[in-house]
Length: 200
Image 1 (cartoon, rainbow, N blue to C red):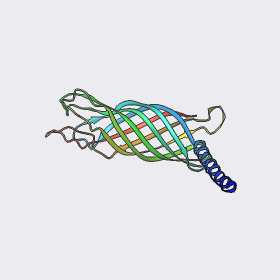
Image 2: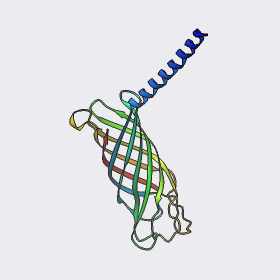
Image 3: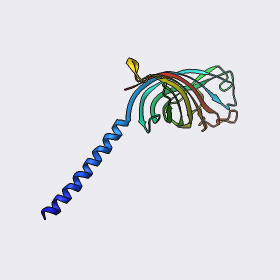
Image 4: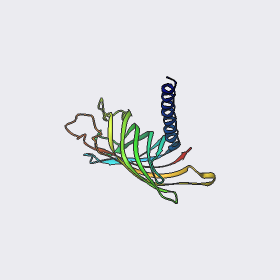
């Protein structure tokens, strides 16, 4: 009976040790950070004249290291984007400002000298719609596409963890949610972002 008890205890202890070791390994690979920067956005394939609109983004970073030079990075960003109309959609010049919670999930390749490249899908969830457009709902609640970028992150010294980056996002889904016989709603979001970040 004692032998059976000792075997059972050894099995439970080994499982607990394995679980703690696995959790510890995962935590060692995880890192967190913050980022902020500017946006320059516009609509592509729009059936009305537009110009770029300046905005900003900011939020949190979660990075999981896969290998020496590879990682997966997920971000949770507040991002303002949209476009300026030019005497077309509403008969006057107007800023069509949209606010999103943007969640990119990016595969990142890190070089030995600190330069990195990234690419992956992104989903945007509408937080605030464009105002005074003449439509009850101007934009769809969900926007999805692909993001890609490059940047530099310091790998050592007092600036370790600090980085700068530039990224382009191209939406694949239609932005417009309104119904109009004069204006098509099948235009897409496009955003250029540049900013700074810090990984703890």
